[in-house]
Length: 114
Image 1 (cartoon, rainbow, N blue to C red):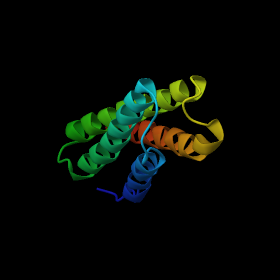
Image 2 (tube, rainbow, N blue to C red; image 1 turned 90 degrees about the vertical axis):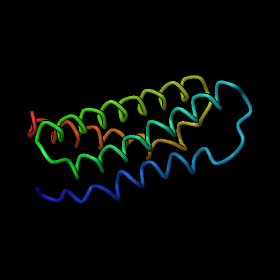
Image 3 (cartoon, rainbow, N blue to C red; image 1 turned 90 degrees about the horizontal axis):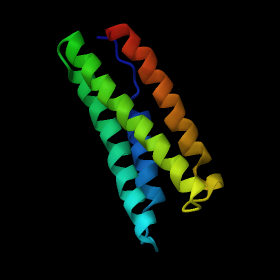
Image 4 (cartoon, rainbow, N blue to C red; image 1 turned 180 degrees about the vertical axis):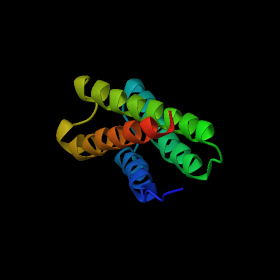
Protein backbone atom coordinates (compact mmCIF):
# COMPACT_ATOMS: atom_id res chain seq x y z
CA UNK A 1 0.00 0.00 0.00
CA UNK A 2 1.20 3.49 -0.82
CA UNK A 3 1.92 5.63 2.22
CA UNK A 4 -0.11 8.82 1.93
CA UNK A 5 1.70 10.62 4.80
CA UNK A 6 -1.59 12.10 5.97
CA UNK A 7 -1.43 10.83 9.55
CA UNK A 8 0.07 14.07 10.82
CA UNK A 9 -2.57 16.18 9.09
CA UNK A 10 -5.38 14.15 10.64
CA UNK A 11 -3.72 14.19 14.05
CA UNK A 12 -3.03 17.94 13.81
CA UNK A 13 -6.64 18.58 12.80
CA UNK A 14 -7.96 16.63 15.79
CA UNK A 15 -5.46 18.28 18.14
CA UNK A 16 -6.40 21.75 16.91
CA UNK A 17 -10.04 21.03 17.76
CA UNK A 18 -9.08 19.78 21.22
CA UNK A 19 -6.96 22.89 21.82
CA UNK A 20 -9.72 25.21 20.57
CA UNK A 21 -12.08 23.93 23.27
CA UNK A 22 -9.53 23.50 26.05
CA UNK A 23 -11.42 25.80 28.42
CA UNK A 24 -14.72 25.69 30.31
CA UNK A 25 -17.67 26.72 28.16
CA UNK A 26 -20.47 28.94 29.40
CA UNK A 27 -23.57 27.42 27.91
CA UNK A 28 -25.10 23.98 27.56
CA UNK A 29 -25.17 24.29 23.76
CA UNK A 30 -21.54 25.37 23.52
CA UNK A 31 -20.43 22.53 25.79
CA UNK A 32 -22.56 19.94 23.98
CA UNK A 33 -21.41 20.93 20.50
CA UNK A 34 -17.76 21.29 21.54
CA UNK A 35 -17.69 17.78 23.02
CA UNK A 36 -19.36 16.34 19.93
CA UNK A 37 -16.89 18.15 17.66
CA UNK A 38 -13.96 16.79 19.63
CA UNK A 39 -15.38 13.28 19.29
CA UNK A 40 -15.96 13.52 15.54
CA UNK A 41 -12.59 15.16 14.77
CA UNK A 42 -10.70 12.58 16.83
CA UNK A 43 -12.75 9.76 15.32
CA UNK A 44 -11.79 10.92 11.83
CA UNK A 45 -8.09 10.78 12.75
CA UNK A 46 -8.41 7.39 14.42
CA UNK A 47 -10.39 5.85 11.56
CA UNK A 48 -7.89 7.15 9.03
CA UNK A 49 -5.23 5.30 11.00
CA UNK A 50 -7.39 2.18 10.77
CA UNK A 51 -7.67 2.70 7.01
CA UNK A 52 -3.90 2.59 6.66
CA UNK A 53 -3.74 -0.70 8.54
CA UNK A 54 -6.72 -2.36 6.84
CA UNK A 55 -6.05 -5.56 4.96
CA UNK A 56 -8.58 -5.65 2.16
CA UNK A 57 -9.80 -2.98 -0.22
CA UNK A 58 -13.32 -3.48 1.13
CA UNK A 59 -12.10 -2.80 4.66
CA UNK A 60 -10.10 0.22 3.46
CA UNK A 61 -13.19 1.66 1.75
CA UNK A 62 -15.26 1.09 4.90
CA UNK A 63 -12.73 2.93 7.09
CA UNK A 64 -12.56 5.78 4.59
CA UNK A 65 -16.37 6.06 4.57
CA UNK A 66 -16.39 6.33 8.36
CA UNK A 67 -13.59 8.91 8.22
CA UNK A 68 -15.55 10.91 5.65
CA UNK A 69 -18.72 10.76 7.75
CA UNK A 70 -16.87 12.07 10.79
CA UNK A 71 -15.18 14.86 8.81
CA UNK A 72 -18.51 15.98 7.38
CA UNK A 73 -20.03 15.92 10.85
CA UNK A 74 -17.15 18.07 12.10
CA UNK A 75 -17.63 20.60 9.33
CA UNK A 76 -21.38 20.80 9.99
CA UNK A 77 -20.71 21.25 13.70
CA UNK A 78 -18.33 24.14 13.00
CA UNK A 79 -20.96 25.76 10.77
CA UNK A 80 -23.65 25.46 13.45
CA UNK A 81 -21.41 26.91 16.15
CA UNK A 82 -20.41 29.86 13.96
CA UNK A 83 -24.04 30.57 12.99
CA UNK A 84 -25.11 30.36 16.64
CA UNK A 85 -22.28 32.73 17.65
CA UNK A 86 -20.79 30.10 19.93
CA UNK A 87 -17.35 30.45 18.33
CA UNK A 88 -15.75 33.26 16.38
CA UNK A 89 -15.51 32.52 12.66
CA UNK A 90 -12.10 34.22 12.53
CA UNK A 91 -10.70 31.77 15.11
CA UNK A 92 -11.75 28.67 13.21
CA UNK A 93 -11.37 29.57 9.54
CA UNK A 94 -8.02 27.75 9.24
CA UNK A 95 -9.37 24.64 11.00
CA UNK A 96 -12.49 24.67 8.80
CA UNK A 97 -10.28 24.98 5.73
CA UNK A 98 -8.22 21.98 6.82
CA UNK A 99 -11.44 20.08 7.52
CA UNK A 100 -12.63 20.80 3.98
CA UNK A 101 -9.29 19.78 2.46
CA UNK A 102 -9.29 16.51 4.39
CA UNK A 103 -12.81 15.79 3.11
CA UNK A 104 -11.61 16.31 -0.46
CA UNK A 105 -8.62 14.02 0.10
CA UNK A 106 -10.75 11.25 1.58
CA UNK A 107 -13.30 11.50 -1.27
CA UNK A 108 -10.44 11.13 -3.77
CA UNK A 109 -9.00 8.14 -1.90
CA UNK A 110 -12.42 6.56 -1.59
CA UNK A 111 -12.85 6.56 -5.37
CA UNK A 112 -9.78 4.31 -5.58
CA UNK A 113 -11.23 1.69 -3.24
CA UNK A 114 -14.84 1.60 -4.51
